[in-house]
Image 1 (cartoon, rainbow, N blue to C red):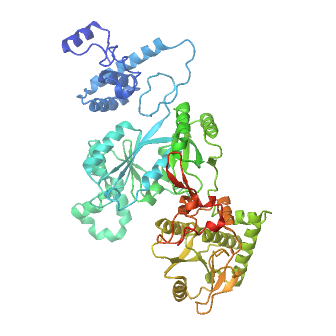
Image 2 (tube, one colour; image 1 turned 60 degrees about the horizontal axis):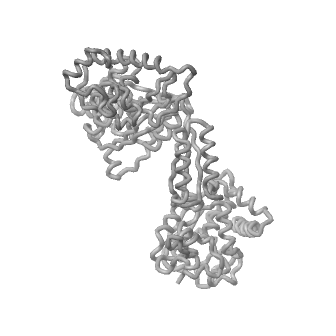
Image 3 (cartoon, rainbow, N blue to C red; image 1 turned 30 degrees about the vertical axis):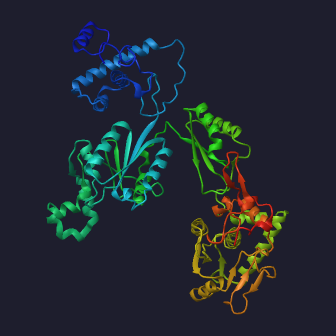
Length: 620
């Protein structure tokens, strides 16, 4: 603030020996480097520039204090702050009037960061609301507990029009909490903490937040009464101890910073008020660390954070191409549509149907659709895919629709379903089990079995039984896929070891109620040419009915079924393996090998194999 052109100010600057003009550009203070990025401005311009953005004078005092602290300069007394703020307001008004054009100014774009001041004066304030999330707990930093709270808070805040710009993870230390909260509280509209508000010795969030604002922790009467009501009659005999050490421990959750406020939420479905309130101190909201409690509190109090001025929109493109190959197109899109659209790129090595997930985020529909169309034109033809996102949930509908088609694959699907339905009619679900070792054939079989059972029991919950014959030295990727498939299809998996005969003997002892096993056998498999769709085991083997729905399917039909319905399969098939056994007897198929233009050896996916006779050539 101040009158930069006054004679008194000129003499004062000369006596002080400081620079008369901007340190960086030798221009007038406050106008020298304001157009430069904030990180390159001199300290004088930073302070004057900041003062010019202030609104009401009284609300400006705390912000100026934070700037003085950031610049490591002694803070001015409050009267000086108010005088400086009033002068800054007058200077801003004069500059606005001098710079006003004859025509109405064009709408200004939103700044890249909601916390960077916008140097362009205008009647419409920036609607961006920012927040920071602080996760507190030694158990997170030690790897004892996986954090899901920050993910939930970020997603919910964004849906409410609030942009999260920082996520921190802190230990259970009062000093660390105080320093982080003090810094973030001055930089963001909202700060949401998670954890450390319980009754134990390591719950120190209340103390840390109190220290951040220079406050003491005091028992809150309303919280004390709530805790006593919650404890009920079991503590009646201990009421005299409330002032002692035992009482202090019992009432620890009622010891909050002196300026704390309580917020009671309501269940969005039932409208019932919550029993326990959320505590806030200034712009800091202290959520519990238990994920279920945090989600419940956020659902009931989301109105506290709702920003109706902003709605964040998103689009997602799934791209079946290497990220390095599409990087130039993404770079052009990011430059062309910044800052209205943010372009993100995230490789995904777990999907069988795309390799990169591209996200587009904006606040307006027009630029978002323009960016999407731009990428659709710029990316390689056919690179953008639209896979079925819920193939298991839609299994019955899609599988039976395929069975009714006139294609050759449709005829094979219809025949396989007929075999599965005959087995279901002859045996109940408790008597049926599907053999599953993570391979492509049994993956098809599990999907068919699930589709048939879902269609027959659309309103009934059930759990399919599966048996996994574990080999010596299995591929880790295969075992991971087996566990993921069990969750995906809700399988009850029985794991047995040894050769097939020994494994079936163990299964008979463990699960004597199982009478039939669905197998993913095809006629091209060893010793399978003479099998029928339903046949009993050989003499001397455990007594089972073998059900073979895929007996007449070809290698290419297996892959066509998987890829047509977007069914997840083991990632090893995308790396050049065509038949999976153990790590000791299985290698990549050499017929899929190729060398890139840069001389790098790679392998095509298994579904690119031309000669079916080469399927098992990599097995020894």
